[in-house]
Structures are given as structure tokens and as C-alpha cells.
Length: 488
Image (cartoon, rainbow, N blue to C red; front, side):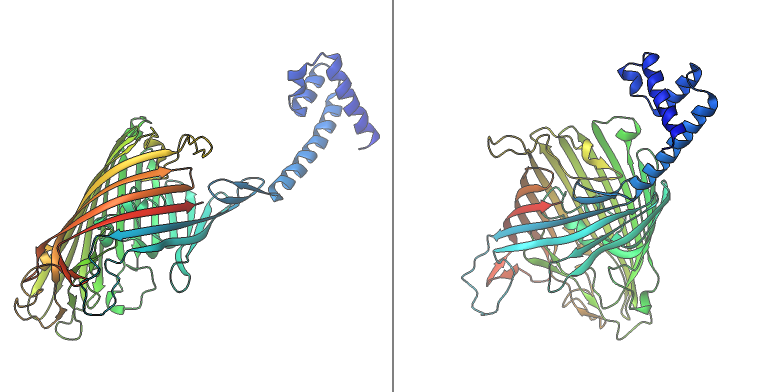
């Protein structure tokens, strides 16, 4: 600092004291003080301009240094953030460790064949590690690796462009805009396993999407996808799936922050190749027995059309006030195709209704954002020293699977000849499940869940008298599930 500038600074400081600046005035910015000194005649305008110019250079250098600096903090994960807040990297992960116990007998099987059906087990249900990134004001993305299995696989990988907040673009492997239950993270779902609805919806697929929240309380999304989480390899179904969802939270529209009044509508239209089945065989919500064997339509003979038209419709509703939440969803999957014998137009219908009560009083409205629910966070974290804090919640769910359209002529054994249906529908085409659960959320990252799940199988196909588990015929399943979860 040269002599002239030093003199000016000294004059500024001396002038501020002579003018009687108190503590509050001294807290003002340097620019405000200089302007006041000029107004009082302590400094000339030229001296003030010189002092402000030096101050401006210092500000510019400080801003550049701040922007280039990196700080580390912990906020729902380990976060590295640039000084200006425009760029960040957040590391996150989850581990879900489960115990599953079934009521099946284990002493009647004389076949000697090993089977996982009905086996009581410990299981690492999920083990994932990922990162969320933010670039500048408009770009973000996420990459997640799934560690369950013989080798790590890509679970999520996308980039999001938000040049305009109401109209954003996303491309990569991500959750398609369909189903409130699926769009709620597995870290935050209401029960240990999702319902029958989840088996027939578009979940994580490769594609592109436009989405946003054009006005308060309203969300929309429209996506185009391969119809799977892999690259397209079948030119018979090159047409992309079209998937869309729109939601409204009428409580938010009415500025009621204590409630959620959510309604949603979703659709998906595309095709699947013959030979791929109809979403596979259906097992229980407790990951136990498979009660419905889906037919397989061969593409080796018959008509020139080698694809099955698939249309899906989803409805969702939530009413929540304070610690109480009522939620329901309905999904209809329609399959339309022809064989040399006849045409088929078959539906699989699934739905559930549930009720939850947070005993410790935490509000569901506080965890709702953008058409989906986030995590339940206790008002006070659990303190093991005096056993205080944490959040407790109880809930019940009733769900239904209805594939009775597949119990029809041509799709079942002995019901006429259809050369293209090589695997017939078998076992049961309907099931209903009741789940009762309790969860304890120690803090935002740790929770424990206990569920009891009872499933009854109905609408037997042909002469079916039950599914065979360990040598016994069964027409129901009871299971107890327990989960220990850590997520950050």
C-alpha cells in the first residue's frame, strides 16, 4: 500500500472516530463508511474514489479466492463444495440388511432337490455406493453402483440440465416417472418391501425425459425409454416406450403446510418382444413363494408380428395430516397380441391401500416434495444414554394381485391348442396380502423395521390345489421380515 493510500485509510479511520461512529456503524461496509466520510467532507471525492477502487480490487481478489476454494461438510452424505456454492460432490450410500422367516414346513420334502422357496435367511438386500454432482447453476447428475451380486452393476447414472426450472431435461439410466411408491427411495418406503403394484411398472430404465414443476404444487414428466435398464438389442421392438406422469398437491396449492392432498396419474405405452413373458412369474411381497406362472408366447412360428403391445395406467392418491397418512395406488397393465390361433387382450390389475401413524408426532407433510416422499426424520435423534428421542411409526397395508385374464382359453393347459403359447399359465392368478409393520427411526441415517406379511392365493388354474413348498401344498404364506438400515 503506497503512502497516499495509507494516508487515506488513516484519514478514514480517524474520521470515523471523530464523527462518532459507534459499534453498529463500524459494522457497516467500507463503501458505506467512505461515502459517509465524503458526505461529511472528511474525504474529497477523488480520495474516496481512490479508496473505493482499492477496495474493489480487494473484493475481486477475495471473490476469486472464495470461488476456487473447496470446503468439506456433512449434510445427508459427505459433501465437497466450492466456495461459491455452485459446484459440489456428495458421496452417498446405503446398506439394507434383512432377515426373512417363513412358516413353511421344512421336513416333508423327499425329492432331495434344493430350493430357495420358503428358506429362512439373512440377506444383504441392498448395498449401494454413489455420488451426486452439481456443476454451475444448471447441471447436475448422479451415479450409483449396486454391490449386491457377483459383480458391481450400474444402478443409476444420469445428467440433468435445468436451464429453466419448470422445463428440465434428463438423460441416462434413472427412475421413470411412474408410481409414487417407486419414486419414493427404498431408503424411505413405508414397509420393508414394495407392493404388488411395483412388479409391473416402469422402474429404472435407459432413456430421456423432460420434467419440472411449472407452478406450486404441480409436477409433470414425460420420458422415452428402451423399456428396460439395458441397451436395445431387439430390432422387433425398436419403438420407444412413452411414459408420463402428472401430480397435484392440493394442500400445497392452498398454502396448507400441515397437509398433503396428493393425486397422480401415470401412463406408459410401448411393446415387448414375444418370448419375454409378461413381467415374469409373480412372487409374494415377502420375497417368498412364486404363486403365478406367466405364460410365454413363442416367436418362432405363426404371425409376422413378433411383439406384444403393452399399455399401463397408474393412479395414486395420498391424504396426510400431521402424523397420519393414508395412501393408495392402482395399476393396470394391458397386453394385446395375436397368435395363429386367436387374438388376446389381457390385463393384470394390482392395487394397495395403506394407513400409517407416526406415534411420536412427526409430520408427513414435512417430507413431501416434488410429487414424492423423502425420509422420515425424528424431531430429536435417539439418545441411548437415556433412551430418549427417535421416531416410531406403525402402519398396515392391504394389496391385491389380479391376473385372472390369464386363466383363459389357450393360455392354460388343457384349454385348447395354441402352438405359440409354449409355457402355460399355472398355479394361481390372484393373491391378496396383508402387511402390518412397525419402524423405529433412530436418526436420519439409521432405522429398524419389522413387518408381518400374510398372503392368500386365490383363483386356482385348472386342477391346482396349492403351490408345492418342501413337499407340502400351500395356499397361503406367512412371513416375518426385519430390516436394519444404514444410509447416508
